[in-house]
Length: 106
Image 1 (cartoon, rainbow, N blue to C red):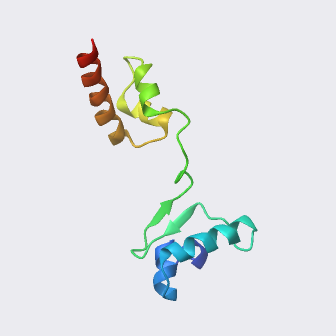
Image 2 (image 1 turned 90 degrees about the vertical axis):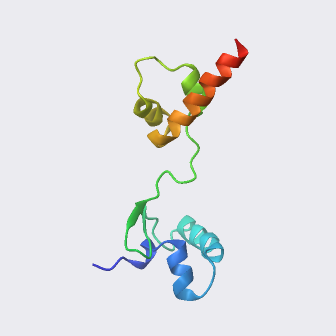
């Protein structure tokens, strides 16, 4: 089934219209803000894959460092990731850096 046009990524729209994605983005934002076009929680790329865009550009409610500082020892990296709103693969490098930082400080 073909993707509806409002679900196309900015890059796909740009490619089909001969402009850059930097041109498409502000126009899409303006049109979505005024409800000229519907807001869609997904975007479909040139490869046909759909991506959930609901959290793109949002700042996590709690910083990684704050969560890691108060981290309960029973929490897994996935628990921390869920609390921060990031991918679990992001947690380990931050945890490791904080452990090194604590070793050098004290």
